[in-house]
Image (cartoon, rainbow, N blue to C red):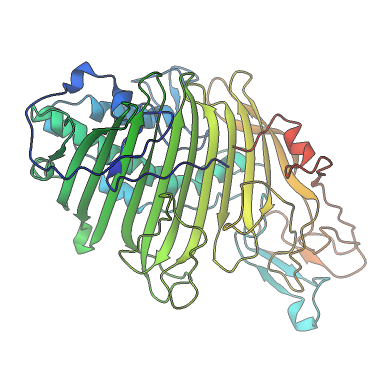
Length: 504
C-alpha cells in the first residue's frame, strides 16, 4: 500500500509533482496583479490533470468528448468521463460553465445485488442449540454469491467493486470539480493565479449562484519550495442546504509539480457533515471524511490511495498527521472516532489505459475482526483481468492484501479463523461495449465454518437468491473456492501474485 509524505500546508491541494514538497503557509491575503497567466501554463502545473477516482470496470455510453480510454464510439470509461468534466471546468471562461453539483458529496456506497445477499437457512450444522438452527444470514457477509450481477450483466467482482466505490467516486469527483471551479472562476473574472501570495475568491464563487450553496471562505495560494518546485494550495469552505437540510463542507487540496519532470503529486481532503441511520454512532449525526493522495510520473503512471469513513458527530476532522483519514481512530462509545464504513482504495495504474493493480478494502464497523478485500489486476491491452476476493486484517492494520476466507461470518457457531481460500474470477472485457464477464469462477461454498457440508444432516440454504432454502439436505456440498498458499512468505498469496498482481 502506498504511503505519502506529510504536507505542511493547511489549504486545499492541487496535484502537480511526483514528490510532495513541504511548504510554509503564506498569510498574505490581498489580491495581487496578474503575475502568472493561467492560459500560458500547462494544467498539471497547478492542478492534477487527468486524475479521477473510479472503478476500472465502470463505463458510460458517451458520443462526445471521447478520449484514449474509450472502447468504441459510444462507450467510454467512467474515469475518462470524469476527467473530461473536470477539464471543462479548468478551461472554462464563463460563469455558467463554472458551476458544480454539491449533491455529489452526499453519495453513499452500496452492494451489488449478486454480492452478499441475506440468505435463509434451516438445520445449520454449526448451531449449538436447535433454536439457532433456522434463521437468516445478514446481507453483506457472504461475498460473491452469484457469478453475474443480474441488474447489469457484469461479472460480480466487477459489479461489486463499482458499487462499493460509488460514494468514494462521487465525493472525490465533487472535490476535484469544486476545486477546478475555482480555476474557472479565476479565469472568468480575468484574475490570475497568485504568485507567492494568497488569492481570495469567496465573493466570485458566491456570484455563481449555485443552488442552495453559500461559500464562506475560498482561497488559492501559490508558493515554491527550496528546490523551486511549485506548490498550489486550495481551500474551500461552504454550506450546502438542499430542502433546508444543512451540510457544512470543507475541501482542501495541495498540488505540487517537480520542475525537472512532468510528474506531480498532492492530496485532497474532504469533510462533510451528514446524517446516517442504523449505524454504530450514538445518533445519526456523522462527518464523512475523505482523503485522496496521488502521484504521477512522466510515463503517466498514477499511484493513488483514497480513504474514507463516517466519524461520529459533526465537524469531526478525522485526519492523521499525514493528512490521511485515520483508520486507528475508532469510535469506542465515548469519542468521535469512525463508527461506520471505513474504506481504503489503493491503485497503481496507467492514466491513459487504466491497466494496473487495484486493492479495495472495507470494514463496516470498528469492532469487526477483519476487513473485506478485493485484489484486482487489469490489462486493457488484452481486455482481461483477474479479481480475487477474501478477508484481510482489521482495517486499522490492513495493507490491502487478502489474508484468507471466512465462510460463516455471522451464522450460528460462527468461527472467524481464516482458511486458505479466496474467491476468484477470470475477467474478460468487451472491446465493443466495455462489459466485464467472468470466463472462469471459483466462488461457491456452503456458509459453514468448514466451507463444506457433508450431506448427513438437515441443512438447506438459499443458494440462488429466491428468499427460501433450496439446497438438498441429503446432498454433499464441497466448496469451489480457490485454494491459496504463501510459500515465499511475502504476505501475498502465490496464486494471486502468479497473475502478475502487485500490491499497490
